Structure formats: structure tokens, C-alpha cells
Length: 336
Image 1 (cartoon, helix red, strand yellow):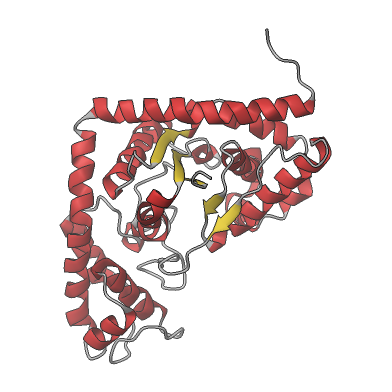
Image 2 (cartoon, rainbow, N blue to C red):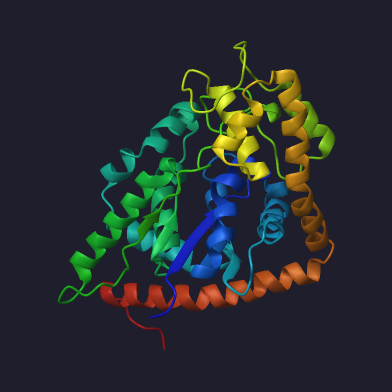
């Protein structure tokens, strides 16, 4: 048997931050040799909320370059842009027509975002879990790396695939492969620097809430210096009543490669005045090779274009084969 296939992606909305890297991309890199990986820049998802058309294309290339800079290896992985493959949009429409609307209305993230947007909430925001399902199902993904906040959407994908197979498969034929979640708990939820109870997010209006992968040393220094802490003496890991302390020490442990026991032993007698410079130096050094490699990729636009062209061709072949199976099952005619 060949390698199992993994599918994942990131929206090109703003710069990637430490939460994106430590919670997702670093895990992709560490395990990529075990799988046949398809990593896309999900730019169709980026317009489900108000966006800036002037920066969308640039942001898309930035994310693709950061994939490479973070260590995605083209021997094991395919990198492509979602909107470059029309099968994503076409399969979404076909799946829309067999997905009950109440399934979408029950999505927690839709309810939360709809409250924020009020009357401006779009049909795309309601429907984007079906687009996410199309993204996954097009590539016959065996596993999908997801955080806890996306687990509900993967369950919806599984439900849609099962419903389609039941309605249109012959003799229990599996037209669409039902994927399994790949959830890694350690480092999966990196919290905001301004509120240790909230996840680090690109949508947070405060730049001080996150450290971006491309932040220069002076910006990292400023953000860590101003990050929220508490007034309790001594530093410790694992105390739920000290969310900021727990988050910052966990960050230090992951970026330095030290175990929880090693971090506890090193930091338990420190004050914030001594710990923050240590975390700052560690963060700057951890991001330095990523930033250097990113610059090298962006300076060679011909190379980046070739990566995305090759990725599109490989991904498109797989996606179109799946789309053909779906359309055949639905009874569509084949163009001459």
C-alpha cells in the first residue's frame, strides 16, 4: 500500500503567526515524510469575510513562500493555490445541493462570526464548511490535520461524504473517501499575548496579540515586553488559574526544544523581568532561519511560480478525477 494522503491549508489573510506555525505548519513539516501531502493556500475562503482585493494575490504568494520557508519538502508535498483549480468551486455547488441547511446553521464558528458581522453576514460565511468539505474530498484525503476549533467542520465533511455515498453510490460504493481527523494536542492552541484565555488569531485587531513569523527582532521585543502577565511570584506550567504564565512558558518550551520539566526547573524562580528577555531571544533565534529562507524564496519569483504551477498540475489531476466520479454518480453527461 502507498502512503496515506493528508490535506490541509491556510487562508491568505494577513501574515502567519506563531499560532499558525506551532499549531499546524510545524507539525506538517515534522510528519510530512510519512504521508503524501497536499497543502493549499485557501484563498477562496479568504473572501467569506470582508477582505482587501489589493493585497489578496500578494498575501497568497506570501503564504506559499512561507510554506517552503518553514520546511515543506516538495519530495513529499504538493503546494498549490485553491482558486487556481476550478474543481473546488464546482464540487462545492454539487455538495451544496445535498447538504441540509440546518447542518450549516448549527456550525459554532458561523454563529460566532455572524454575531460580529450582523446584517453584513454573507451566504459564503454560512456555506464555507461545504467549500472546506470539497477541498478535502477532492483529494481523497485519508487524514486532515485539524485543531479542536475545526473538528466540527471535519465531522460535517464526513457527514456530507457519507450522505453522498448513501444517496448515489451503487452497492455501497464509496464515491467519496471519508477522512479521519489528525489532532495533535501539544502546542495546538497558542494563546494571545494580550489575553491568555483567547487563541492567537490573525483577526484580532491588536498587533500586540500575536507574533508574526516575519516580525523583525524589534517588533518581537516590543510585543513580548508588553505582553500580559500576572503578579504572582514564581513561574509555573499547567496552572489553569495563570493562563498567561502557562502560555508564555509553553511557548518558550516549544521554541527552545525543552521539555516541560526542563522549563519548570529553569524558570520556576524567575520573575517576568528576567523571563521576558529570555523568551524574546529564543523567539528571535527560532524565527531567524524561517525569515532568511522566506527572503530567498521571494527573491526568486521564477522558482515560486514554478512550484505553484507544478502543484496546480498535480493537484488538478487528482481533483478532476474525483469531480468526474461525483458528476457521473449524479447523472451528468460527459462532454464530447
